[in-house]
Image (spheres, rainbow, N blue to C red):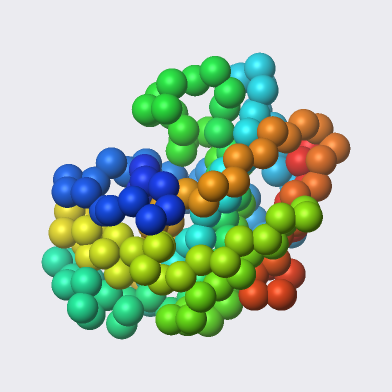
Length: 180
């Protein structure tokens, strides 16, 4: 299993070749477990992503057929070190780099994400999930269980020891992460 985060923001086009970060499976926090802050940076922020789970093997998938290759979505919380360059190269290698929420069935309808007192409604046209899946499959075989994060959301929070980050997806609790 691999997790691939495209380096693009909401509503930006998917470029070719894509700028991506590959996050190793050993860096993914297991559900219900706390996220431990590594000692390798002076401070930490978290970025929020919508993530899709690949449901079948594919290579060179067309955007037209991409919805057949993922079956569920969730919210993902990506831990980012403060003071490191954007393309530091180690962003997806350290432990606890990514926390995934509860998987929900994929939908073509707009999704509403709530965190704290803030709410955000996103349409599939802004996420460009189909284009992201197609682009990733052009360069790498996608396999069942892979996670693709088509874009980062306009949410970046500073976190410290003892914090809890809680998010809902379409009104359902989806992601709760304790920071230790």
